[in-house]
Image (cartoon, rainbow, N blue to C red; front, side, top):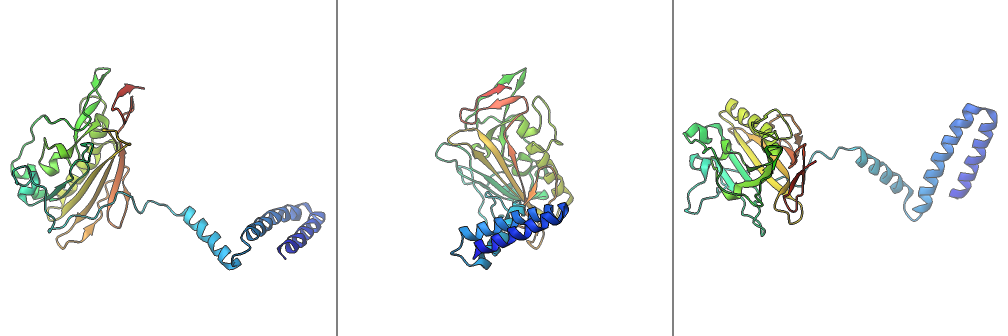
Length: 289
């Protein structure tokens, strides 16, 4: 039956071609469309034709929809009932002693940090409570090794949740080995808080949001992503959302490479890289490009 319909359509199109070039051109297009549909139905002749058409439409719709609404690394926000991580003596870590909720995951079987998550207000930050950060991090993170290339050190000992939020400096479980470019947006000395490829870009803007919303809190989650058994992270996942006095979530729009996921939550996925360097994520070796 389908083959008969196809033959009739071809004959009609040939007549159209004889009557005029323009009509013939349109007919050729029609032949292609009808032939494609007929072939699809022939290949799926055991299925309901209506279901075939619905499936075609559904597939095309899925192809055109942007998949930016969710991410595989999304986690729910912390609550007032969340128990914060404590140090080896059972004391709250950093900002948790001032009422913040701060949870740090245990290292995996390779000794690599897994995540850090904080729910904090401006008044609970270390700087608002007289805590001053030591100038240097003295704890070496997993896979730590540095490389001096063209008189610049390539790597930093990098906090997952930054000190301005957490108030912890030398805590192993909150530290990773990352390039200076990922950590602070530059390859050499100094910082660039306007570089959206660096964590500092997002940290500074989230900190500014907290300072201008003293009655709200920031829920902020950071997760390092590794390649195989490599000790050096390949990417850093950062996720955040605001929380008002009633516990309702609020989107925090800070630009850069950030995207929406799961309602009001925003996230960014940054690569541990540097414009002038090649990085072997298995060995941690850094070389010039």
